[in-house]
Length: 284
Image (cartoon, rainbow, N blue to C red; front, side):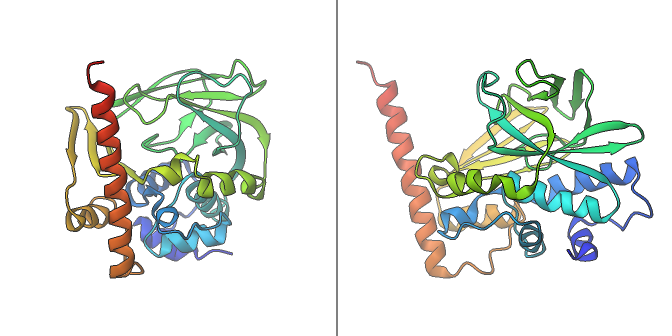
């Protein structure tokens, strides 16, 4: 069981009287606006599990997570409110659709409502602001335009194509329902392997009606209708202010020593990245 009322309080949404479309849209918008996509605990050396109750507890404590945690918690909330929710094995692509199909590095959700199924995904970094119908077409939300189409490699599956300015190219998910526990192996790899992008690079993102805020390492970006605004964060004080102020992260459980060590790692990785970029751009 989860504490539905406390979860709704975090989202700033009143408990809906019934599982309606209007309420679903309000819940989805509130979650992506208030609960950050982030991997802070991985970089603090204390990666968390993906059980729904644990993920909800993280959100109640002022933190977020990545897809398994964000969508796992959101699915539990929707189910508790009476929605018809299905969990799906999915994969995120950086370039083109994976010929092997969804690899399991993403958890996608669909909700059956008013005779139609909708993609409901609060765990796509900088992704959707509101649910999208499982209907082929182009959809605009704020400054971003998405596309939905049947998958060409996964029978019965669907492909969500992101705006070109997004953090990824597309997400493909299979039609069959799965259990949250089936992602345990993928979560272990993504949260602990030195090869994982989540382990190598700190990131935090929050979506809103007008755009998205994205922090990768020390680089903070705002993407909206005006374009992309970018700056590099140079101090630990500024970096932690951004985590708390922009991404709404509660850092009360991170003591001074842990903060110093984390900033050192993130800043060092950023300097190494800058050096590699300079080397790559140097004339041969």
